[in-house]
Image 1 (cartoon, rainbow, N blue to C red):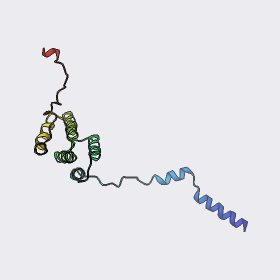
Image 2: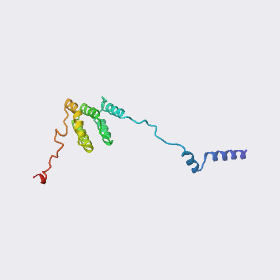
Image 3: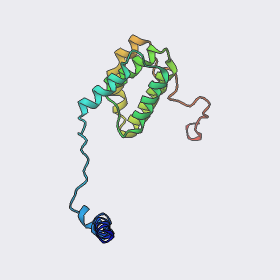
Image 4: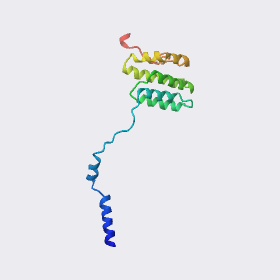
Length: 153
C-alpha cells in the first residue's frame, strides 16, 4: 500500500513540476496580441462629444477630460472644442474655457500657424452664443509687462 502511494505521489509530482525550459518552449508557439478593437476617428469624436455633453458634468470632470485630451498627440476637432466650451459654460467657468482655448492655440501653433485661425473660424458661432472671449480678445497673446525690443527702438 505504501509503495502504491509513493508511486502515485511520484507520478503526480513529475507531471506537475516541469523544468523551466520546458515551460518556455511551450509558450513560444502562442502569440499574445491585443484583442482590443481600434477606435475610428468618428468614434473618438463621438465619445468625447458625449463626455462633454453629459448633463451632470462638473468642473473636475471637465478638467480631467481637458487634461486627458491635452496629453494626446492631437488637436481636437472643432465640434469637440465646442462641446467642451458649452460644458464650461454650463458650470459657469469662463476662466477654464479661456485657458482651454489657450492650450488649443498653443498646440495648433506648434503644428502650423494656419490651424488656429481655422479652428477659431469654426468655433466662432459657439463663442458668440456663449459669450466666451478668446485669448486674443483678452490680450493674452502678448506679454503684459514686456519691454520693447532694443532693435525696435
